[in-house]
Image 1: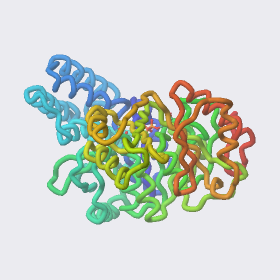
Image 2: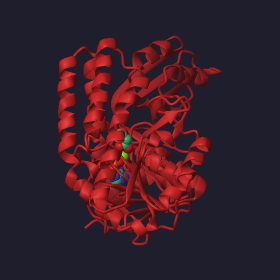
Image 3: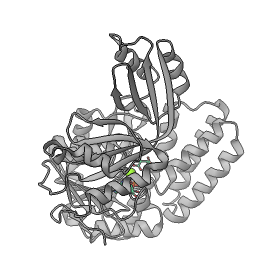
Length: 449
Ligand code: ADP
Ligand code: ASP
Ligand code: MG
C-alpha cells in the first residue's frame, strides 16, 4: 500500500485532475490511498472572501464566492449537485460571518476546510470516470486533532486507530481523502496549518501502514535552491529525514515541516515527485544520510522576516533576561525562528508580525528594542557540516561583501543559518550556489540541464 498526495497545482483544472487519474491508474496495483489539496488557489480565495465578509464587504464576499463556485464547477464538475450543495452551505457560513463581523480561528477552519472537502469529492468522482474503483472518505472522520484551530496537531493514537480500520477498504478500492483537514474530539472541523496536506499524507501513510509516501507536486523534487529565488538548482535524488525537515522548516515549501514526523516514526520513505513529469524519479527521503562529496544538500530561504534586536538595559545580560524575552513572545503567540545572543543583547527573527507592536511595548519595559523588517534567513543544510572544518569562513567569503547578521549553527549540526537583507537574497543565494554546487555529486544530485 502507498499514499499518493497531490498538491493544489496538481488538481487545479480538469486537465490536471486527468493527469492525476492516469498517474494513479498506472499504480493501482500498489494499492494507493490518495490525499488531495484544495484545487489551485482555493484556500487563499476562501480566506480572502471570508475576510471581506467579516470586514463588512458582504456583497464583495458573495461575488468572490460566486466566482469560486463557477471555477470549481467548470474544472471539477457538479457531482450530481453535491458541489452546489457545498457552496450553499458555505454561503450560509459566509453570511453568518458577515453578520457577526468576527473571524475566530474556529470559523477560519470551517471556511478553509471547504477547499479539501470539495477537491476530495471531485477527484474521487473523476477517478471513477477514468475507470478507477475510487471511494471518497471525509478526512475529518479519521484525522483527530487537538483544538488549536488553524494549527491543530493530530492526536496520534486515536487517528492511527481510525486509519488502521480503513486498511481493509484500501486493499480493495482507491480511497480519496482531503488533506489539511481534521476534526477535534468534539467533532469540530480543524486544520493542520497552511501547506498541511503533506502532513496529512504522512499521517495517513503511518496510519494505514503504507510502504511509501509520495508527495506529487509541481517541481521535479527537492532542488538545491528555492526555484522562486534562483532558477537552475539541481534535483536532490536522495536526502535524509533530518536534512529534509530542516530545509522544510527554513522555507523549502515543497514539503511541510511536520511531514517527516510520522514517516520517521514508522520509517516510511517519502518521495517528492512531479505530477507534470511523472517519469522523473524525484527525491527520495530516507532515514540515513547517504555519503556525498558536497558539503550541503540544499539552500533554503525565508524572505519577509523581521529581526528584533533586544538589548539589556543593564550592562551585562541579567539573570533571567532570556526567559523574560521568550515569555513575551510566547504570550503574544509569536514563534521565533532564529536566536543569537551576545553579552548584552539578544536578536531573534519572527515571520508573523501581527503582534509586533504589543511585543515591542512589553520588551521595552526591560530592554532597548530595535526592529529590522524586510530581512531574509538563508539556511544551508547538509549532514557533512558536522565533519567539515572551516565551512563558515568559506560561506562568508563566497558572499563577497554581502552583509550578514545573526549567524547560527543549529545544535543538530545539520544547518548553518544567517540573516541577510531581503534585497541581497537573490545575489547571496546565487553566490552560495555557485560556490557549493558547481560540481554536484552524481550519486546524490541530478545536475540541472
Ligand atoms: P503543492 O501545492 O503541491 O503542495 P507547494 O507550492 O506547496 O506545492 O510546494 C512546491 C513549491 O515549493 C515549488 O513550486 C517551489 O516553488 C517551492 N520550493 C521552495 N523551495 C524548494 C526547493 N528547495 N525545492 C523544490 N521546490 C521548492
Ligand atoms: N490547501 C491548504 C493550503 O493551501 C493545504 C495544502 O495545500 O497543503 O494551505
Ligand atoms: Mg504544499
